[in-house]
Image 1 (cartoon, rainbow, N blue to C red):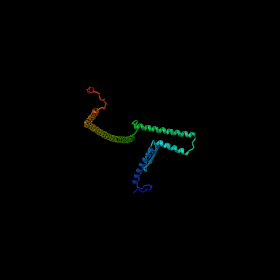
Image 2: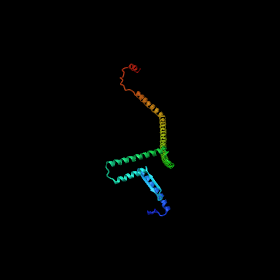
Image 3: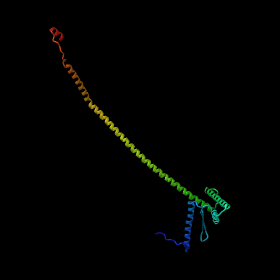
Image 4: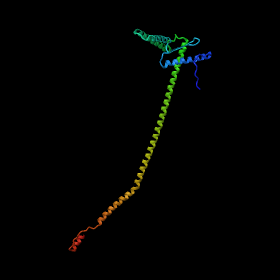
Length: 244
């Protein structure tokens, strides 16, 4: 269930009025500080309680902010300025910026631990709290950066581990394929050797049969009679000589 709309009027109960003032005051001071940081604005805030107690916040210096406010109010009443008044205006702006620069330099030196003798115990305590808050913020940011770097290194390590495992599996598969290929080559070589040994006697028999057939052909050719026409001898003596 949402909150109901609050009627903006004076709170009669003193305790409730004081609690509401404290809460609203802190919220207003917080918003003023956030506005000055986020928007780089020069903010000055003054609050007086019903008892006359002062609460204030200034992004730079309250006195310089009040002077700038008065100058701006004067310029609004005199919008048409001549050259002299314009020169005075920029001169005042330069003086204001110079004063702000001096304040910033002084704050910087104090943050560095220098020129602290002029500060009171309360101001030193406030400076210490500010430094502790700054240091806490720096440490938190450093821890976050280190955590992010550790996560990134872990992620890269996991990726490298996965790549190494994949390369190991590929190397094992290639080694197994090489072993299978070598085994097949050896089996094929053994099969060829066995086939050559088993067929070698038939080759020799075939060669011998071929040589034998060639010899038979030669013998048959030599055994065939040559047909020659011999003339019949006229006398037996000539026949004997011829037969001899």
